[in-house]
Image 1 (cartoon, helix red, strand yellow):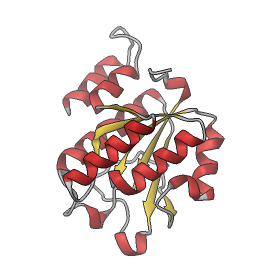
Image 2: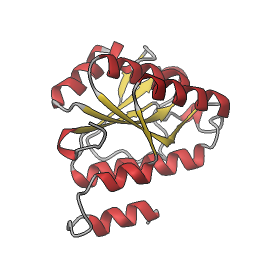
Image 3: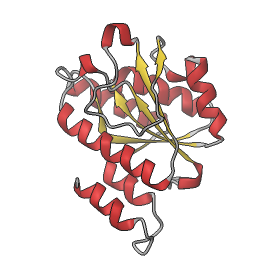
Image 4: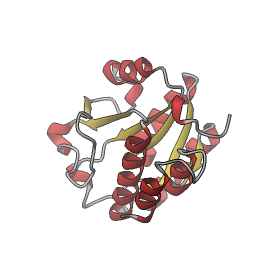
Length: 182
């Protein structure tokens, strides 16, 4: 399958932490798109699971990323979210088999998590414009590695418009405002 189905999808939000904000390539746009993905998932009822990589060193999730009430990031020390038992269990407990992935850094935590998810049989869609790394070339390399391994690479707007079946859905006006940044 190459299209997302909201009833079988989960949004995985990886490591948008305070210490990354000033050093990640294109971070303002990455955060803008992350917030659109989060708002869209919340609007249509897609569960959201978030992580933080070693928050004692990298800080908590930046206040600029707007996680819905009740979504508390899982603390981890492994780069790969699926090597953390709590995160892997939380993802598995949803019963969802399609992961929409956004996060930092593309070539480390995001890539390793995506590779594990693929090996576990999940279908993975990465919002390319909602992931990055300190260096642009590292982000490009991480995204290409995920693509080579079987992840679908998309943009935020593409994934958001797949969350609803048509423009007559009563949630469409709200989704359209999210896409437009309003």
